[in-house]
Image (cartoon, rainbow, N blue to C red):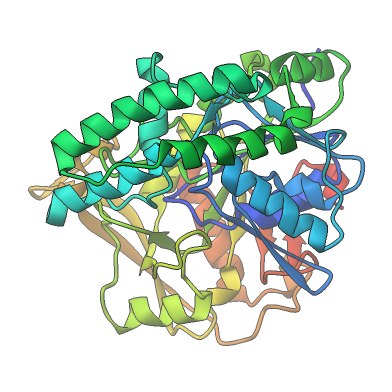
Length: 434
């Protein structure tokens, strides 16, 4: 049976605008599932004149009758999640054990993970990776270490949980003192905090892998919501300046506990230009007035951290590479309206190293490349009210077509503003969006 599921992945360094697309697709789905990352991801959704910034809770929570799932591959921060739940309830958004489920196998981000993240970044000085200090990397490290990990299922047995917290917490204090000369954490405070979190979150914890596999068998649509962007993938991104989990569509089966056949149609989300946050190679970066103009027009500041994003021209080489990694079926081109007003636009269509054209994209050599640019005329007309492709200025239409040609994937959706309604369906096969 062919899967009718949809997987949404970011194709650049994150912040591509996935939240808006996931929100639009959620109303066509029975389940919305996070399969990777943690509270270091931030999806912003504007609906009904309100703005929602979600870090852990899937975007489907804004739709009735959608079941939202935290998969086993997520680094789940109970403190952040409960804070989001309380904030959503205060805004009259229903969230309970009927529409929000947490995998019993999800790893918990503990206070010592955040502490270690900060201490490690401080110790690296100028060589720091530029993490969000949300404890994601240390959490996944403990997952691999096994003996120092705590999972969501541990919240179901408070007595055992307390023993684990005291045992592991003492180990961490010893290590932090030796490595960083750091002050010890108050383990008693952590125990008390997690007793409360366990009471609040336990009703939502279950075997989500079985839940999702049963949904697939019944033909009920699942929307898999990726966090971060493909160039931050732990295996295929600009290592070590990456996140700590597999964020491409390749991560869905392991991160959600479903068959590879369940990935379904893959929708790749990309900006009409390129941004990234933190350190690492960025071939098309514009550290000048043009980059600042893009930053100002696009309000390019992190949803999670508030940090100004680095901005540059569209790197189509990056998108072609990441689209092939995830087997992207169609593209959603976001923030096209941000480029209004530029006399000309540039697209990176190739790389050179030592004067030689690069044939195969290699993320390990991205700091060595020289960009080959193609220049296209820009447009001056406001496009935020366009609802059909034919209504876009000819220059904008040509820009979209050229992106599709270079990447080798049709542009199915075009976003011309942050609101749900500011969307153009172009060559999309997702008919329910019409």
